[in-house]
Amino acid sequence: MTLQLFLQILVNGLMIGAIYALVASGFTLILGVLQVFNFAQGQFYMLGAFATYAVASVLGAPYVVAILAALAAMALLGILVYFSIIKWTLRYGFFHTMLATVAFGTIVGQAAVLKFGYSTAVVAAVVDKTLALGGVSLNSGKLLVLAGALVVMGLLYWFMRTKIGVAMQACAENREVACLQGINAGKVFWVTMAVGCALCGVAGALVVPVLSASTNMGQLIFLKAIIVVLVGGTGSMAGALLAAFLVGIVESFAFQYVESFAPLVIFALVAILIYFRPGGLLGKPLPIPGQ
Image (cartoon, rainbow, N blue to C red):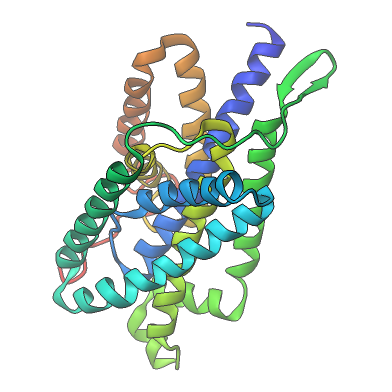
């Protein structure tokens, strides 16, 4: 393997790992704070990609504006889903809420197919040049995706240390004690839903100039997010970030050498890690509420 090929595969793995990290972080945040297994999480990623396409390609707005529009749209949609669906199903238990998200995700997915079909929506490359480092050529577009995802992760790290971020962590640790300390759980819940869905929207917005947008991308990213959560540990944000990059890099190298058998390599990795660490790398099994 040449150095150029190694670095190209590594950049691919880091880029897709960064996208996995954003989606898995949003999923983990919602699961940890609301104790909701959001099966529609991947659809926010898909909608974020199509929102970016609509703003950047159809309306002709700058790409940065399209990213902000996707972020705001998915955050507002997350709030709407919380107040219209999740808030009313939480009282009936974990499985009722989970089934409600399954229904919502299915409706969104089918509506997207009816609207866009199975064709891809292409956004013009933001950077179409290659970056040469010591004779090694790297795709600048993929590096931009990685840089953008790292910036978002940095903002998430800062946000989680603000007053509302600390309240979210307190609710994730022990909801009853947090409420006794004066934390408004209702406010924390809808903010958590907004942030978790916005992370998916940003991930879709960042990746669409490189991978385009398609109606099945939500289901695919959701499966990878589940794998990341299993590897990193349920309820662990740090574990989700670590596992996302690990899965992304392993997947990139596996695809280079075994191509269509790459998913088997990922599943083998998950099986080995779960066997030796059932709670994941940095987490612990999350008990089902009410049991």
